[in-house]
Length: 121
Image (cartoon, rainbow, N blue to C red; front, side, top):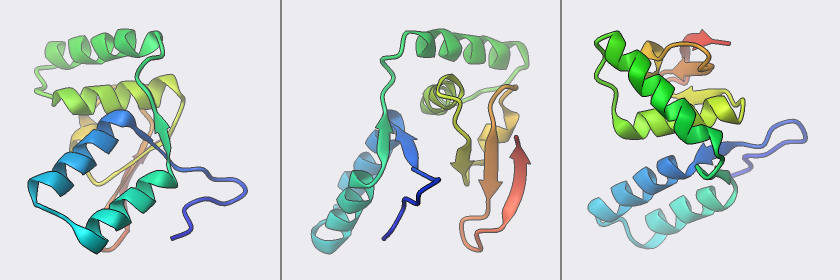
C-alpha cells in the first residue's frame, strides 16, 4: 500500500498506534493480518506526545470539554492535542471529534464509503 506521495506524508499519534496494536492483540490477529498492520504502521510517521505543549493542550481541551458538559475519552483528548500542536488535519471516522472545540482541524469520513461527512479546516 502506497501511503505517501510527494506532497502527503500520513502521520498518527502514538496513542492511535497503541489503540491499533491493542485491538490486534485483543482479537488475536496473527499471521498476515498482524503483518499487514505492522506494514501500515511502518509507513506512517508516529507522532510522539513528548512535545512540551501537548500536555498543556490536552489540559485545555479537557477543561473546555468539562465546561461544555462533554464526556470525551482520554485517548481522544491526547490524539486531538497532538493534532493541534503539530498543526495536523485529523482524518477520522469517529464522530466524537466533531464535539471538540477549535482549533482542532479534522475531516470526518464514512468508514464504508469513504465519503466526507463533516470537516473543520
